Image 1 (cartoon, rainbow, N blue to C red):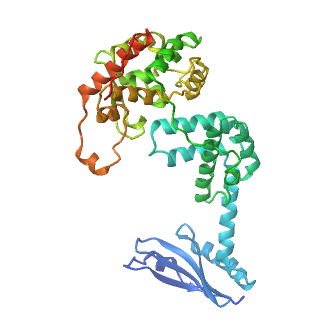
Image 2: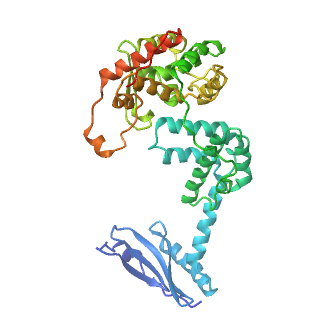
Length: 406
């Protein structure tokens, strides 16, 4: 290599003032220092290779001194002499550092980072469910493995264990895929081991949840007490229908949300599917059930805590399994079917559609209607839920009930 006569002095660099546009101070041999409008100064090396002009950054001044910049400049010039691109070599080293970072990052640590960075806009219930699935099904298998070491076979083993619950298995696979997509965006990995596993377990077609006739509801209500279930499980099953709440909304509820004296349950927006706060006007029967539950769980935060693990709410599968084993002649009835059952009864007994939709906390699909409709129908909603509870009592004791058309 030819000798380079470097010309820059510390005083020259220190006295260089920022301008409206970036400009350069040449040192020699393609080495220069660029003065940016912000006032910062960076060492660059410009060179020609294979007929193309390229540029690579050495570092900022004064963090990289004049001597250090010139020593690095000599190394980079040697690469050019060898027909190697300093810019591409630098990119390769950066990729290697990223790969090393991926190998040093375990799945659990990165998944927890993914939850914080990408799920903050989702509801509290959605985040909690995602974390529970990660804790229960994913971390025990690959939580301690480094991102770069996880292969499709590891994902396959996880979802195969859940083949009996196809919907859950596919949801777990999707979560792992989303975690790795985030890792790819951060350049920690280049492939996603969960993507090839799509379709390995076929989800059953989506079916509407079966709702009960009034006669079936009476049988269901009488059968609840005869299954040998825990008192809180029975209470939660009853309150699902009496409040018309979703399963996750009820099971994640805390005592701080209830005012039993005012007969109200206020569900915060973060736990609602539509992202809006929702008020449930409690019937006298619902209040009585809650007072009984309070004797059992009032010292805890959750109304329906897990009886197996402290500090967490009852799991969704608890009610799913309980409903499956209730023997009252309708084996396919599920917790979500209580909403359809209650809504159908209220509509058949003359309650308006708008009132029932508000009880179900459904969002108005028409944006125009939603923009101009703000009625809450509080009195009618309160009357509807009390009628529902009274009607269930009549059905339970076997009273003759004549259904009226709306």
